[in-house]
Length: 205
Length: 160
Image (cartoon, rainbow over all chains, first blue to last red; front, side):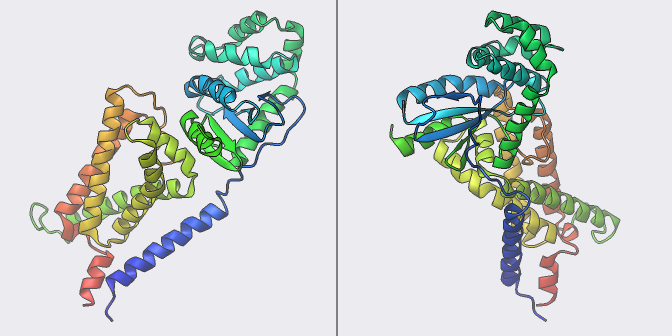
């Protein structure tokens, strides 16, 4: 029997395509939906703005710190049109990310999230390499005048870590693998440049 | 293509078959992992190398996983071996250049992105993995009749 090589090639290619589609459609299906709004959400811009962007970020990720000026520029340029919802996404290869996120969530409980968030990012190189950054995080908390007793009670409880885990789960369901990742209207964009390009194509330069 | 390996259908020949299967498997797995993942994540990895403009990076994030996957699969099956081994050698050398320039420029890349989300390797290690892949592909090409054993190319030519 003569085997046609081109036919074999086509057969292998089609089977390969089907296998990828099958796996992508079942096991690896991402559902990048806007994360549901909850009490205590951390949002920049008008919460009722037309386009809500969910930002999945990690306090120990250098790229997440570098993207902040880009986000501020976008919020200014598209004022009233966009809002950015902060979501915790501590990556497993960053050993202090979960702890930093818990501190930030406890600062959120005292209404000081953004000032603590900005400090964590601006001082990232100072605490990233520490064995145990807890004392450093405490010092930052004092800088933003957090009530330290409330902070300690919050850190000892499960609410803050529960919120961090719930955000992380939202990210995993959305298909987030790296940070910073933005979910815009059901689509994923990784990095500030890609978010900027998307907003420029949607809302103009 | 018959020199240096003695009896290419003997034990030396089976080493070449295993080498071909290794190259094919690595390309197939890494291509598959990227193809089933979200292209936005792979696009970001390409951008971290800071070498191609955004439109080209977007195109590469869609096309490259398929090229890698099909090249690997065809090598694994022994189909169009002279072509696919050359393509794999070209891919490995291009990746070495890409990784090499990132090392020289000290770009802050902590995930090479070579194997999708499966394995995270530092850039230095990736350079040597690519070097090994290039050497393996060239060896398979050099001893094509040995590495092509049990492949579909041979089956097709035998049935003509």
